[in-house]
Every structure is written in C-alpha cells, then in structure tokens.
Amino acid sequence: MKAAFPVALSAALVAALSALAQTHPSAVQRKNSDYAELAKAPEKARAKVNPLERNPNSIAAGANLFDQHCAECHGEDGEGRKKGPSLRVPQVQDAAPGALFWLLSNGVVRKGMPVWSKLPEPQRWQLVAFIKSLGVLPPADSSSKSGGSGAASISSLPPH
Amino acid sequence: MVRVASFLVVLVTLFFLSPAVSSAQESPYIVTYDQHLEEPGNLEVEYFSTFGTQRGSNNFHSFWTEFEYGATAWWTTEFYLDGQTTFHDSTVFTGFRWENRFRPLKREHFINPVLYIEYENINGADKILKEVEGHDAESDFAAPNADGRHERTREIETKLILGSNFKGWNVSENIISTKNLSNEPWEFGYAIGVSRPLALEASPKRCSFCRQNFIAGVEMYGGLGDRYSFGLNQTSQYLAPVLVWNLPSDWSLRFSPGFGLNDNSHRLIFRWGLSREFSGFGSMVSRLFGGHR
Figure 1 (cartoon, each protein chain N blue to C red):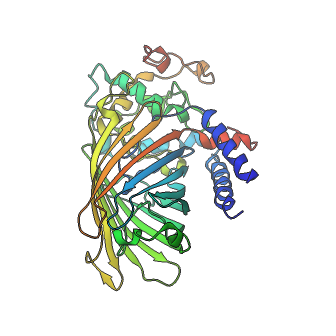
Figure 2: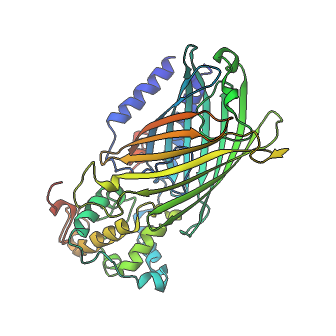
Figure 3: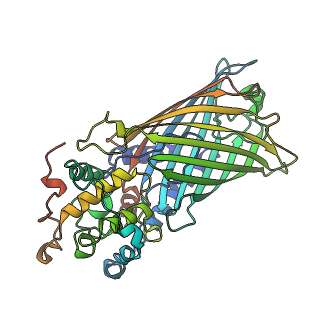
C-alpha cells in the first residue's frame, strides 16, 4: 500500500495539472489581445533583419521546425487552434521579422507561449522565414482548416 | 497491487496512443538544469541509468524514471522514482522525489533565473547522484543495501538556476541548498554546465543524423559543505562531458561519462538516459476527463 502512494500521487498530479494547463481563455477573449504582444517589441529588436532571408533553404528548414515545435498549438499550416492563435492574419504577416523573432525569443509566458530561446538564433530566424511565407488566409477560408494560399504551407512542401 | 497494475496499463496505453508528437530539443545535461522549462501541456517520460565504481565495496547501477510535465509556460513539475542495484548485493527501490521549477520573469534576459524546489523521500541506499551536496562522499555508498534502506531521508532541496544563451552556447549555473527535515544543517552544492549544438542552423530535410540534432557540452558539479563547514574541504567533485542526440521521432538519448576529481569522489560515473516527449498530453488527459480541446 505504501508503494502505491507515489504512483497514486503522480496520477492525481498529472490529472490536476493537465486540467490547469487547459484553462485557456475563449477564442473571442483572446482575439483582441493575442497579437498585442507583437507591438511590445522594442524598436531595436523590430529593426533587426532576418540574416537568413535570402537563404533558399530557410523556408523548408523553418517548415520542419514549425512542424516539430509550433504546429501542436498553432495548427499544421499556422491557421490557429484553441491553444494558439492563427499566424496567418495581417497582424502577424505584416509584422517586422525582427518583431516575430523577438516574440519567439521571449515568449508570452503568462499566456502559455513558451520561450523559444532554447532554439539557436539561426533556427528562430528560419522559423520567422517560414511563418512570413505562409501569407494571410483569405477571410472566407479563415474558419476552415484547409491550409490555404500560403506560399509554403507545410502540406505544400515536398515529403521529408 | 491491482491499482498499481491498472495505472501502469493506463500509462503504457497512453504511451502508444499518444497524440501528435513534437521533436524534443533536450539539453544534454544530466545534473545541471538550464533555464528552459517544458512546453505547456507536454509530458516527457525519461529513464536514466548510472553505473558507478566504488572503492572498498561493490560497484552499483542506479536508475530513475522521471515524469516531467509542463503545467504552464512558467511552471514545470516532475516526479521521480529511484532505485539501484549494487553488484553482489541486491536491487532496491530507494524512494521518490517531486520537484517544481518556476520562471519568475516574463521576458528573456542575458541571465535568466529559474526557482527550483524539490521534496525528496528517499532511503539511505539511494545512489542516483542526481546532485551532490554537503559532504557527500564515495564512502557513504559503501554500506550494504540491507542497512541503507532502513535509513529514511526526507529533504527539501532548493536551487537557484541561472541560464544564458549566447551565440548558440548555453551556460547554466545551479546553486543548491538542501535541508534534511530531521534537524540537520543546511547543505550546499553547485552544478555548472556549458553546451552547444554541433550546428546552429536546421537542415531543410528531416534527418536523424544531422548535426543540429546533437548537442555536446561539459558539466561540473560537487558539494560545498554545510552551514558549519562551508567550502570544498571533504567534498566530492565531478567533471563530466555530456552529449544528447535529439531524434526527430521525439526520442532523446543522452550519454555522460563522469570523472571524480578528488579522493572523496567515485572514480567513474557513466550515465545514459532515454527520454520521449509527448506533445499535447495535457489536452489528451483533459479530453479523457470530459474537457474540451
């Protein structure tokens, strides 16, 4: 019976914490504030230029990284899910690459977006290149999960 | 016993029916903590194994299983189950640990602090060497398991974790203080690690052997005495190269041969660990309990 205690404790802990982790604000509540964090990027960070912008492999490498680290929350084609907002909206697509890089590096930890500084800087820039290549979803498609008109959605990339 | 078996069945089922998975980006350290927390909703299951040489007694193989869960983007919680086999002696379960790590700052800085607190309920036969503190020494491990397992230790351990990333390098420092709850003095220790991926840019192809999947480094750790005798005198110290291989299939494999730096230390501690990350585990459990995605 004593041996069962830690096992029972861990089960209860995992259940309770997973319930806590799922306590997200509704999509409507989030819509207004999700992208506000981008505006907080300092001017110095915003002015940074993506050093890998002209690298032909950046978008494909970024797509791989996105699939591995971001798709779970933001959707396979960046169209957004309940856990993470769409990245195919003008607020993101029109944002300076430096602002996206800053957001990736700092996260929005109070709202569930992790800090991605554990990825080396070049990989974060590759992610930025991929995100910028997705393009804005047309309004009619924004409610669907069909991918869309992005220049390089994951589904349009050659198989690995 | 039936309850334990049921829980194990559920765990194994979850293991194989896991939802979408993400490629892990694990740090290579085994003792040192860096500033990065588990992504929210992800569960990482890890198994670590340590082979240690022992002068004046039998060598040992200790092991622990770790369940690491990202409760939020600023809070990670972990549960450990420890055990060990001492050659020519026996195999014993040595206890459990529950640790929590909190990120107090909202933004990334040049030095990023993380606060760590752990409760340990282990016995005197515990040999996992997850950290070294106080006057821990090789001779503490010489007692037979039959004696050590009757000595119960309940401790609170705190760490200040400081981590920096600079041009692909990670530098992490841990300052450790431990209080045995049975009226023993505070003990101190440290761990320092430096690491870097073998390549900073990701490959356009998904590959197992790409250089960016390997992170190499070195860590150093040891005791710093206790509140009455602070310092390096009569402490054990270790230096250990570390390597992690992060596979695109969500598995990570770590290796670390550790070398004792003084006479109080084990001459060799060879460690390896295998881990798998389950992305979206929290969502899946939430759905099982009637929650919505």
